Amino acid sequence: MPSTDRRAWQDVLARIEGDLVAGTIGPGDRLPPERTLATELGVGRSSVREALRVLEVLGLIRTQTGSGPRAGAIVVARPSGGMAALMRLHVAAGGFDVADVVATRLVLEAAVVTALAESRAVDLTAPAELLAAMDGELTTAEFLAIDAAFHVSLAAASGNDVIAAVMTGLRSSVEGYVLAGAAFVPSWELMAQRLRAEHRGIVAAIASHDAPRARTLVHDHITGYYADSKLAPLER
Amino acid sequence: MPSTDRRAWQDVLARIEGDLVAGTIGPGDRLPPERTLATELGVGRSSVREALRVLEVLGLIRTQTGSGPRAGAIVVARPSGGMAALMRLHVAAGGFDVADVVATRLVLEAAVVTALAESRAVDLTAPAELLAAMDGELTTAEFLAIDAAFHVSLAAASGNDVIAAVMTGLRSSVEGYVLAGAAFVPSWELMAQRLRAEHRGIVAAIASHDAPRARTLVHDHITGYYADSKLAPLER
DNA sequence: TGTATGGTGTGGTCAGACCACATGACCGAA
DNA sequence: TTCGGTCATGTGGTCTGACCACACCATACA
Image 1: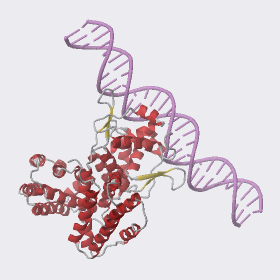
Image 2 (image 1 turned 90 degrees about the horizontal axis):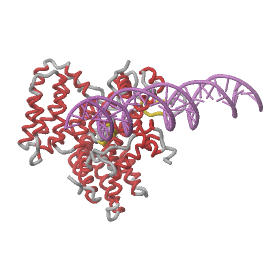
Image 3 (image 1 turned 135 degrees about the vertical axis):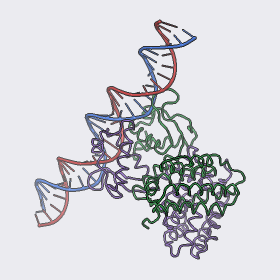
Image 4 (image 1 turned 60 degrees about the vertical axis):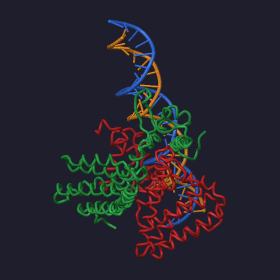
């Protein structure tokens, strides 16, 4: 008999979290079928499904219809999606201020480039590829999407998955505002050119292990765009 | 007719997110009853419930049984709970490394005390009260809970809700490890005394607007505890 | 040997039913 | 009039049962 005071779906969540902590299940493993979990825990299948839905949005599992080894609920542990959903909704609801999001990005991004510049040998292949991709002919939305991926790839290169996930969430949460802000830029072509040059400057500073310079560049890069796209003057 | 390719609960989520972005609903407002949403969107009530469950875990809404103005699903926009659940589960699943969590904490915490020390006038009432509360006779778990609250209160005092929420999540995600690590400390009474003194030192450095000193102290404070509680030597 | 074909197990969804609970209106007694 | 109890109502919480779509896999057949 599960607990009586907690709600049924929380029992399911607790059970799965317990299995994760105990190591009984981990990334790549399949969760028991919904019907099995329901009977095992003495709850209805709908309650199981509510818990699985939560895990899916948090990026913990992925579900797949059909049968066979690839079907069912599989633990994937991809935090970025959950972080993005969480932050996007809280910005939408007004619980998060866009200015705070940008401020947090500044802090994390500065820490990332500092770590990269001070590290002996880092793999900047992914950021370099994204830089190259940004040279092509792109719409504003496409350009900004690769831009976001570039910054996330820097965080990923630093080896800190937590910062990378948070960065993904931060960027995704203000994606709409960033895109809308692009309309305020007098000449997008010029702006894109400037952003490309700034990106290259940041990568160069990292490669030459000049941490202070990398910090300055990344700071100016971010504040510069937000200022020009009229996103800075928000409340607060 | 909602979309056909998306899953039903995603339609519900999209509808509510749209209302949030449009400003139709905001913190304090009530969502339509589940049955109403179901018929309006042409989905079953269970699909609506799956979406609401997600929003609840993310800290966007709170649900209440009964009738009257306080019943139903109410937008609350409290990101901390969602952040805590997200990070806790991802640490449990192995997607987040404890070392990365600690590293991220170091970055954010340093940024927080820097901002506080450089700010003209900050309200440190809440941190001070928690400091006082930490002087009482407490179990290890109680002490650590107030300790966590102290650090979050610093972030809150800096005025950045995003950092405060992330900090809550980071701390909560390793709560179990921190508590387990306390067992490795030779004399907890001594450790508690040291932590108290370090906290007071950090607050003093902030009050005297000595940002570099505050940074150093907070860095040593965190790394010191993790080293002594044998949490530092993890994989990576 | 290769190819249909159908069984089977899985998630996705819905409809309906019932419960617990908080509110508020109504009604009756003091 | 006022106070107190009682009941209708509306809400979320849960379960059951049913059906569909889909992917796999074993079997039978050509």
